[in-house]
Amino acid sequence: MANPFLGGLDFLNHTIKHWNQPATEAFWENDFCQFAYRANGVLSVKPHQSEKPPLILSAGIHGNETLPIEWLNLTVMRLINDEQTLSRPVLFVLGNPKAMSLQQRFESLNLNRLFCGEWRNQDQSNYETRRAELLENVISGFYQDEKRFSPKDWLHLDLHTAIRGSFREKFAVYPFVKDRTAPEYLPKMLKQAGVESLLLMHKEANTFSSYTSRKFGMESLTIELGKVKPFGQNSQEDLVDFNQTLLGYLAGNLDTKSQDPEIFCVDKEIIHCGEGFELNLSESGFNFTEYPPETWIWKEHNKEKGKEGYTQWIVFPNTQVPKGQRAGLILRKSP
Ligand SMILES: [Zn+2]
Image 1 (tube, rainbow, N blue to C red):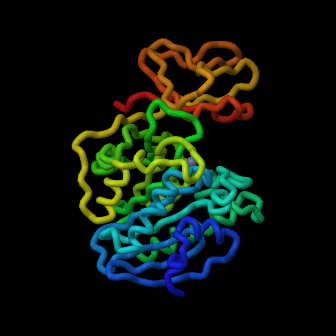
Image 2: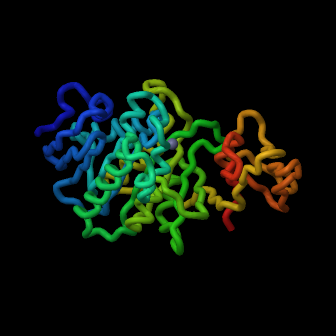
Image 3: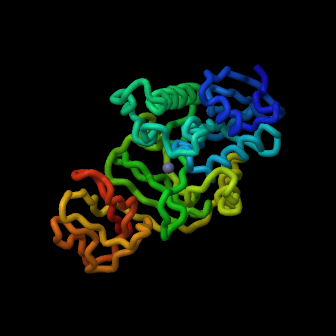
């Protein structure tokens, strides 16, 4: 089948319109690249001669996080329309087309908790369960195709926007894998892309970016790029630095700043204790709310907790979780 994005539907609209139909594989090429449409919302693009290691770009794992979804679509269409140079194989993934069509975060299960095989433990009739399985298979297939590159040189960027506000608008999360450290270029590339903060996680998770690093040993990041807005209400102006850096990376001429972003590590995990639990937060509950030294952060059975002799920050605060679950992560600056 020829290029399915010629009939007036771009990659994004085509993906949403056909979320419920089995995708017909399609293969075509232009002067610079070969295209393979693998599944609904999944497109691989390879330059006729690729010298550089592969990249996986995903967005819409949460269906209502529209700014990076729209950015990814524009980037795909630049390649299809011969407007962008490419030096490396790229797999583009729109994560949750059904949730995107519903303009919701997910339909019944949070897709970003189902990777690393966790989907096997869920109701197999759920859309998200089947989607996690499909995405794992698609990544494995792409990995097999490009196996000549060392996994450490691969990069997966999983793009999101946040529900709550943040005192640091753009930040990246580096999944935990035992005994590894980020290569030198990665924080510098983030800084160049306007991502000012990097958070090093402290234990393994089942997110999409955890899957590519835990299963294959790729470098990967979850990147938060701003706030959730409906389709059509975003400004790509908010991603100018990000866009410039990523288009450079696609073309193979990455220009990085010499500075690093601020680097944070997890200091504590707050667990909801049930009765007498409270977070020391304003109503808005922003990410990166700052606690100066000797400030309490939460109350456990009405007793103040979390005071330290150094500054701390909170991310992902949530007081609505059931007893025994995580109500937030406390960070400190990485030494
Ligand atoms: Zn998200």
